[in-house]
Length: 450
Image (cartoon, rainbow, N blue to C red; front, side, top):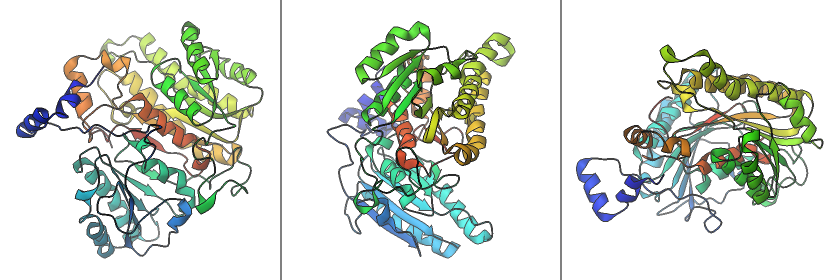
């Protein structure tokens, strides 16, 4: 369903009226397209504190000066005390207003030093700073914080956050290297595989980084799952479109359009993992757990069937199939697992105790499994947590509740399925091996939850 308010605020009368009434003024977001694959403008590099990062190894084009930058990268990894924290203000204060509409600000921080409480305090301060700036900057611009120690390991992450692909990701704190490794080759054979990089430290094959990889997306016959399948196919993956037998015709339609294959399967079946493994004798590189259902009702009115059906689809099936595909070796070394959580699992939502429980369970799965899966199987495990996304399901929500969902974020609008898909594709990227155990909200920096 079209966002008529967003359209109205883009007109001259709309801008005047909403400004006078103090109403939200969302800006039309500039998303990725073949015609506009990058932000139009320069990337400005600023520094606060004494940094030891070699940002040239991230393969980014950066400049020391720009009157109207499309993106700003602030290296604050060297901030270790309150005095140098002032340099964050000094660096960004003069340029914030000049950042282009739908521009990006990415702050680079360092991991918290347990042995230095001064450093830990000011590096944690960057999180409050980043989230606050994201809520005030407006005009479709986003602000995110990346904690890292090695610029080379963060190449895919920085390219994503500084591009149109991250249009609906704001106010996020992403750790690079917490449980991860350096960028890996196509099948993860060696942390610094020869030939994995082109000039300037940038991974080769930036346009189609998933070429030669097989990706399976559950619940991919429509909605967000279909968008994820499309985006992974755009990036070169051979996509397996999995959905329930009742949606087999739609799944085949999507698979045929993308040059992939369809797999009609009830993901809650006890042998679902074994059947997926049998259908993929050559193995799997990317597993996207997208299938999910809602059966909303307040707990006092919720029968056991509504509880169990949501938990079975959204959580139990994810646990079972993940275990099977890892233990069978179907998911190859260098592989990626991307699960779908939700801000309902992080902040809670009335009438969704079952759904919130299932999605919080996904977060627990990611945090527990990520370090072990990397060590034992060479696989990373992350999650996306969508907020209000414009789908057929949200279109059915009553008008006033739908409008509240759209406006209660820093970008004052709902996201699109492609926003979730682009974030999933970044986490699935061969160069994202150092991103592990992360739960990234795709919510326009929702005003609910952390």
